[in-house]
Image (cartoon, rainbow, N blue to C red; front, side, top):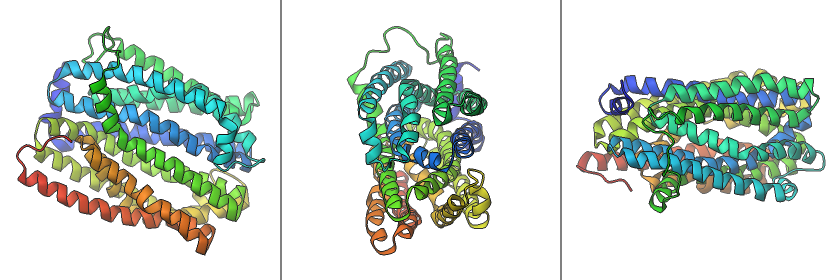
Length: 454
């Protein structure tokens, strides 16, 4: 099957087969990616200490900010490529690939320079104390120096999935995880580099995967490949990419601000160790969230292609299948949090005080987790079919509309417990908002013959 036929299969093959074909590699890749973050935390927790975990947690807002700019390009471009392939507009898809490269280089370099110049004030603002600042700084200096590599690696992986190569995208991610896992103990223990060693291992693993991706896209037999004339930034393509990518960008930006509020609040009421507890909980929750992201990434090219081809029955079908699968995943996370909280967090540290704080936090955070899968799929669904404004609204409804007010108000009455309980409360309210918006949208699909991309 040639590359063009492989892309066109998205509009003809059974939806359940396609979702399995595209979601399973993405799930494996996303699971590997979450394990990749867990491995760093586990090695740092046992090899450097409890305060190092808190220092790592301080860097989460900055990591979220970097991810925001990465998703602005990668997610936006992959969605538009899916729609363009569904419309058989191959020249536009080709130029989007070139613009991904140029945008990632431009944004990645600018982000690195600004953050390195202001790193200590930024980390202080994020909640770092005299005890945790050295750990956070050591980690972020190396990560920022490799930021362009990270952006390019993530962006090209998103394009690989949309161009009909989910297995290759999965391979790139798994390779990165395996290499990082092997290099972590070497740099942390063998070379005695501590938390900086974990960051070096991360950047080196991504650099090796990026080299393989560049080789793939250099192959002229691929439907989308590097060639002259595609790298000049084109205003209309950049606007399309940024318009669609704005939803995950704002979601990550909101996550950055939220983690700052959480870190500052926990430090105020419970001290540095509580920030480490949130860091552990965040890694565990992230594992289940990334599996749902895998289903969303499997849904994205199918929904985008069929929306572009105006086969709305298939769009509805893949959405419903993805919601069911995501709900199973988040319900499993809920059960882990309720039944095995202490055992789960103890994988990250031997410090009894940190274990107790993290176990309580995990149990509270996952109280309403079964509904999170639905909310995540709903947001990604609108993004996948190019309805940027609705995707942005749903992405921000949980974090900005609900969670931020809760984080500001509940701790005034309940202290640190108010911070932890803000998270499940916002999950529940945001899911109700998503359900209302989806019901209205599917009614429009039912009655409209030719719905247009917003």
